[in-house]
Image (cartoon, rainbow, N blue to C red):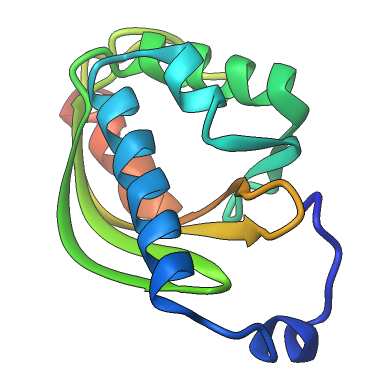
Length: 158
């Protein structure tokens, strides 16, 4: 991600009540902007050198332009997407969110045309903290790509 540090360096970062509140507030702002499909609001929570990565596929988008491209294509592909929060950890290194993602693929996604298939799967999203920028350094998204592919394909493509 844009803020290259080692895990040992990140583990040494102190947490204060003020920093915890700042990171928590920014994550809430990010989540509200995503729910409202407010692209400018989403970008405002990210460092300029942010990186979005879907770990199972290796896809990456870099910088604010990359984040815009990711969100534009993702929200076009899944216009009804919802994330139901199951668990969250907030610390000086950022946020880890576990959520159930639900949505219908009505647009092209990851090189595949729209299938009309519904997806429901648990995902883990890591929002690394960039202390210099006081923003998130992007997102690393983990999910069961096989399950997603099977669900979107539906019975007509198996």
